[in-house]
Structure formats: structure tokens, C-alpha cells
Image 1 (cartoon, rainbow, N blue to C red):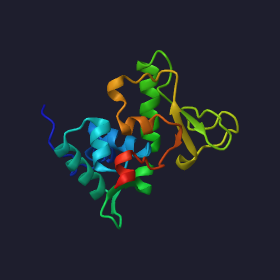
Image 2 (cartoon, rainbow, N blue to C red):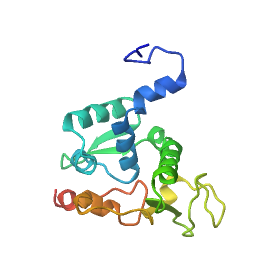
Image 3 (cartoon, rainbow, N blue to C red):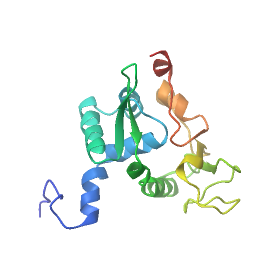
Length: 179
């Protein structure tokens, strides 16, 4: 049986959610937004995504309230996660954890730490030192033991992303800093 192109008319929350974030590029855009990527060119560079696909996915995420598109005084456009977008963190975190367990025999690619006490954050999003459920802005991400970038991956956006930093903290590359 062939699946319909749209599930929007179906009375199922999962199918409707998949209409918004169920495409692989979309989840990667959301993941990178958590990592601080905000500019169109930086998403394109980091993901290697065709520009037309990126444009379509960003429009959908803005239309659905996952991202907000903001223009600063200099006319530079940034895409930032909204509260609705930040609510996707447990999904992104669960997928990262599953991927690390299933496909990263050397260990986690990105370690998550509670910025307040440096405790590792478990799959349940709780700090292993203080036991708190850690809110997204208080999570620090850093390269884990399974992270091994190739030389091809070390563009300016990737260089900024591998530095220890809090989630949602904007990435500023040389291009963005000069603009």
C-alpha cells in the first residue's frame, strides 16, 4: 500500500509531528540549532544540504513555530529555536543516545555535561552528580571519546561546534563576526 504524501488530515499526533520533523534533514537542522547554528550559510556548510532543501525545511520549521526567523539591524538573518523547538530536545537527545549506543563503539560522539557542576548527563537528561533534570540552556556539549572528525569536517562551523559550549549558545564564525 502506498502511503499518502501528507498525513496532516489524519487524526494522529505522531503522523502530524512526522509531517513537521520526520524528514532527516529537518532533525539535523534542529540538532544544529541546539548546537548554536543560526545562519542559513552555516547550516548549509555544516550539513552539506542542498540550498533549496534547506530553504524549504527552514520555511516549514518557521511556519510550524519550531524556529523563529529574525533579522538584525545589519540585515543578517538568524534562525533560533522557539520554546516549541526547545521542547524537541528529548527527541533529539534520545536519537543521539540511540545512535551512540548502536553505532559508536568508541563511545559517545558528543558528551553532555551539567554546566553548573560538570556532571555527565545521562540518557534520562539527569545530571549524574546532583541528580537534577538539566534544562537545555544549562547543558554543555563537548567532544566525547567517540568523536573523530576528518579533515574535511573541520570547516569554520564545525571548528566552532567542537569547542565545549552550552547548547543554544550562538556560533560565531569568522564570516559572521566580520559581517
